[in-house]
Image (cartoon, rainbow over all chains, first blue to last red; front, top):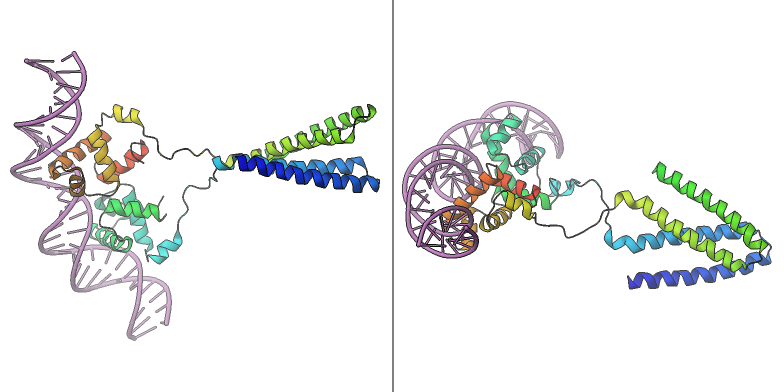
Length: 140
Length: 140
DNA sequence: ATTGAATTCATACTTTCGGGTGAAGGTTTT
DNA sequence: AAAACCTTCACCCGAAAGTATGAATTCAAT
């Protein structure tokens, strides 16, 4: 905050210096006052934008879509589409049987997928898999 | 966005009108150019601050501590301290046995706690309990 | 002091999970 | 075509999780 104020003051000083310089140059050359005012207006608008954002920057953060799939990790860990899908459903608290029903495959198939997932994610339990999946942004 | 630009334009128009008015008044009264420029600078600085914040406002959000315990829900659901603690550890991917070891109690005790938690949270599995716990802000 | 809730533990039983192995059918790549 | 990979499924086994019931202990509140 103190730093921001100092920076603002510094910027102000530089601008005032520039303005004085412009004032000297432009008045000597007899340019219109409107043009001069325009430059002042533009410069201070930009300064205002900059200062305003700077003053609030520490409290703000960009908000994008709150989940962006990390496809690199999927590739790196060699997780297939089906496995990814199973991981998603697992993260929703479904049992293997429920996942099997939802995907119209057998319970054994899901077990295979989950086992492979645990290997690839280097975890031992589904709760940990969900955690890890979220950490790596594989699931929301 | 379109609205913002329109508002900015409108504000600009008003300011320009005011400036013209000031220009007329001040020059008639023979006030210094520096004073005039100062007013322009201040106004456009403020305009810049306002416009800058406005242009980014939709993308920003206040950042506080990222977890605030919802004690009301704990009371409402009649979840005891011990149960809450178990829920926390459960959310960290620990098995019942690991939780038991960490709390220096028997496995059976943890099972009792988890069972009661599932009843109170109205879920059937630990993965769902973790989900629910996060939804209700009982755990980070 | 008694009531009531919380915590602890046990036993017994069922269900779900997870590990290991193997294998058939399909697709893609080489 | 052959190799490599994905998906599917099966069977077995042990471990973990979850359900039900009952009970002893502690601790706060009435």
